[in-house]
Image 1 (cartoon, rainbow, N blue to C red):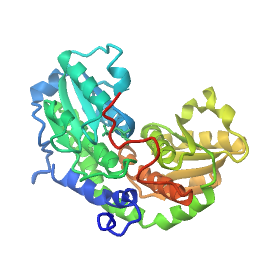
Image 2 (spheres, protein in one colour):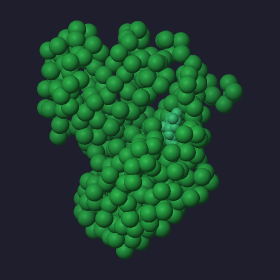
Image 3 (cartoon, rainbow, N blue to C red):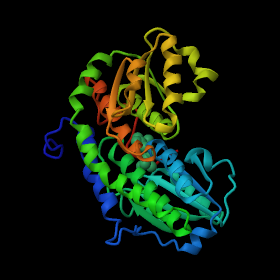
Amino acid sequence: EAAEKDGYDHFMLKEIHEQPKGLDETFNRRIQEDGSIKLDGIHLTKEDIEGFNKVFIVACGTAYHAGLVGKCAIENLAKIPVEIDVASEFRYRDPFVDDKTLFIAISQSGETLDTLAALREAKRKGARILSVVNVVGSSVARESDDVFYTWAGPEIAVASTKAYTTQLMCMYLIGLYMGRAKGVVPDEKYNQYMSELQDIPEKLTKLLKSESTIHDLAKELYKREQVFFIGRGPDAGVSYEGSLKLKEISYINSFAIAAGELKHGTIALIEKDTLVIALATQDKLYEKMLSNIQEVKARGAYVIGVAKEGNREIEKQADRVIYIPNCMDEVSPLLSVVPLQVLAYYIAKERGCDIDKPKNLAKSVTVE
Ligand code: G6P
């Protein structure tokens, strides 16, 4: 097992470090010489794509969080309404799905029972089934009309890391592909997205070099018993994932909420020294996030901000700031989630937790 960990103490850390390579493969294997996207395993024609009036994304856990960001990407690129649900709710609530629905299941293992059952239900109602899966030949893959593999390689740690980021990459590619087929993504936007996605692996490698700073932060924070994650837009999706990572492996009570919702209840829990991790990577929403930070600071919170390099205004409000390399707003989840994964890892390590095999959790849940 030590050999398989490649010198890392845990599979989770190894897998965090495998993300630049995984993302490079997920992206570059799909780009043809002329710069167009080829979605191997997906046989959707232009007519098929134009015939859909809705996309339904269904998944569980971390894969569901990838879907939250995927929803933003597909709506923005393919100009089609996207609904999203957790599989355990979708399968029992008689959702409106028909033969004009593109149903997208996201699953690392391809064996999650709820996701599989939701997929079967959507199929029964006539939807076209596309899955984004990591494990080749898994049940979800076998039962789908179209399969788009994440190519993350085997993920051993229960807490998902590289599967999540490669799922995100797949969702951007699906959105771009659908948008191009419909003729709603102008060349300039397409080229900008493609060059931003292409640059992610290198930026991530750079970001991972600051691991020791995050380890130091973890040493400061590991005794906390409660953490709140806040963000807006794609950052809200990343907040949910950052919070899940932390609670899964460190057993700290963590909670994520869209920052604009804070004032409708959750802010009642913010008091002196409450730890708040505030994602502020969206240029469009930066000022809004600064005022949310101000709101929690006014109640005494200790705030760790996550922002893009160069956006230093946040230093006036937050107690500490983690910077990610500059990028276009839409693709920032591919970068911003990584310091949260690393922070969760080192906090759990400082707490002496069994990181790769957290209590009560399984890598793949094949029962209800
Ligand atoms: C389990 C794992 C999670 C994972 C979820 C969905 O709960 O512990 O890490 O996100 O299942 O798994 P899937 O294989 O469908 O992505």
